[in-house]
Image (cartoon, rainbow, N blue to C red; front, side, top):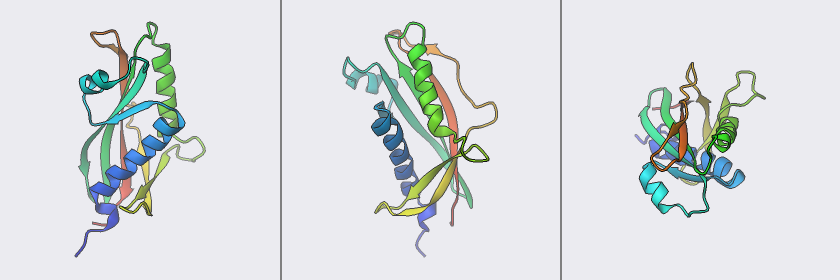
Length: 156
């Protein structure tokens, strides 16, 4: 018996990437990478890029209420007072919450391999928001992170 489209991790990963590429990279013009190390991304960045984001996709639970955890790492260089890092954080938060919804949860469309919609998921920020303080890398780059999860009904 074939696996339902909502239970295919490949569809979920593709959907998450589309959501963040469309919102953070295309709309906000922020450099974005997935599942790469800070050193790999930093080494490949042009000197003119002062802000970037790395999204790390974490373990998943593919039950009837499926969940995929992820962490968004935000970086800003040439930012002595972290003002640009806070602006970057605010842009990211704008895509993680939705004040127009009565529950405040942002919705993400889920897609299959041919980009046909197969359902929707909600982005959940854990109690306490799991948001870090600011940190400073050896080269002076400032960074912080937000942990969140994606939840959706999966037919498995």
